[in-house]
Length: 444
Ligand code: URA
Image (tube, rainbow, N blue to C red; front, side, top):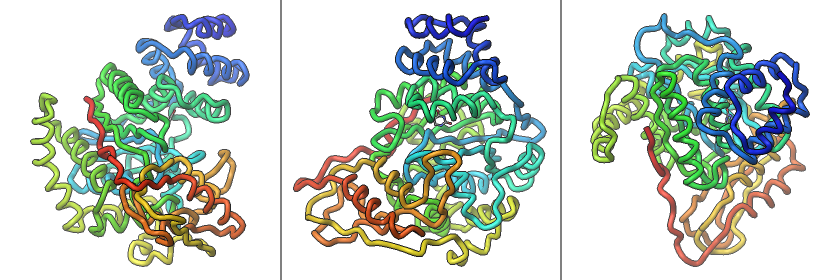
């Protein structure tokens, strides 16, 4: 089979045959298609899209490009959670311990951050000694023994996605619904969980910038999951400002631990609670008919258990076990000075007064990246102690001189640019803005 006619076909907006999709995934994974041809193909997909059938086929071809992890030796329903990527999103570090402390096995493979968006693996790697590089056997063992495991994508899991994602990242072809849906779902299918809760981020710090696109991505991923017998719920959440108070790796670990110690508040709490309840529902195979009344009833029934997991300290204990099992030293939980820290800090203060009315969350992520918390390319080194602690949120009124944020870095010369970028991310207005609810929609 020839690749150029396939590129041309997609350029003309035509649908590809199943065999053509299988061919391009297999040939590219084996190194038989050069990056420049694959890039042309990916750009054609970005511009002309893919049908649901093509997207499902692409997903399965990528899922089957390597090993499929078999979790069937572990009893019960195994639940996974995935976010499409945001700024300050430390929910996995909180939700995993909560849900697993309630007896639901939580099997998670996470990614590294790239560009402005953070990645759970980088956050975990900021914990001294922690290993996010597990073999399949270790992954299964930890899931069985602790109930919560989180590792980087194992070597031969969806290698086609690994290769294609790296190419998309450097060719401006990330923000395409069929490409994002197939990338995420190929890994979720290959990593074997029975039920998956997706957190589809929507807003200025997300790939999906408007609710219609976020809903379309949510529904596409749900359909892919259903076709292969997985239960999938997608929760669309607002990403028009960082989630919680911190952006950056060890800063976010500290915030997650504070949360598990009982400091559950604000939008982070709402997202954590919604994700946790849905994971607990799926993990217990509780069916309901999907009316909003039934969802609310289910939510009111399960959420006290979620709160109790935190309030009783069970979820924090579970986090401690999880860190220890993956080689980390849990002493940092009681002594944050054991985490990487930054030598330099700068306070960012409001230049005028008014309500914080809009935020370009991506710019806050970029500011954190400039401080050293993120990488521009996959080979860049991360400064685990770098990042931003935000002191105000959208809708807050600020007076001139009020503390907006504190910036942390080990490179003093980065502070000025990061401060300018941070300040340019926000707009002030004299009137209190109307804000999106943080949980924007739930789809099954
Ligand atoms: N996360 C992924 O794993 N893949 C994408 O394409 C986007 C976000």
